[in-house]
Image 1 (cartoon, helix red, strand yellow):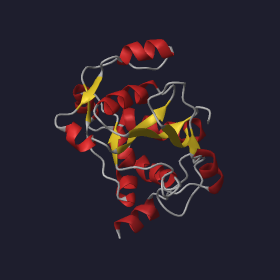
Image 2 (cartoon, helix red, strand yellow):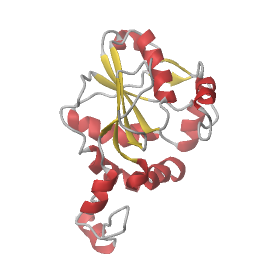
Image 3 (tube, helix red, strand yellow):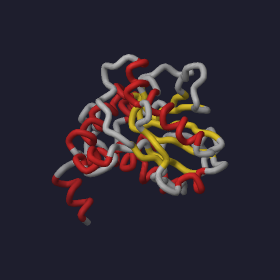
Length: 216
């Protein structure tokens, strides 16, 4: 009943073009085609990641939803994000035993009130019966990666991640899906993957909500 009343007084609309749609979380067909591009991402030689994938295009309609969630706490965009994630193929192209989100530093998470990556993927993982575990921690705050060169990004993240207490036993010999909101150069995902591999996982693949990185 509440959803019906909400839709009557606040009709749902496409988050990209503003056109009215049938349900909250819906996109118009043209904008969904622009936003939802499941893509395999190119990785540099020697990457610790077995593979990396993006559910959609950052500038194709997901940028404002991600920024609204991260910087303004706008959780109203989550149903639209889930619609994009539901277009990820099933089964997932690589073996997955569990999912691990890229962690925020505790001070940043307290300030924001949540880890946006966990919110982005929570419902999608539940629909696919994939457990999500907080098995990585960020050991120190790091400056934003935006605008840094690849080398500067690597230096910025050196030693910034570690296994959570007791994580090694749960990770040993398993195939892990590393989750993040966006993929630019892959430096963050690579830093996390190295920690997970040292912890005994069999493989690490990455899935991000959005990227404009070229496919491989």
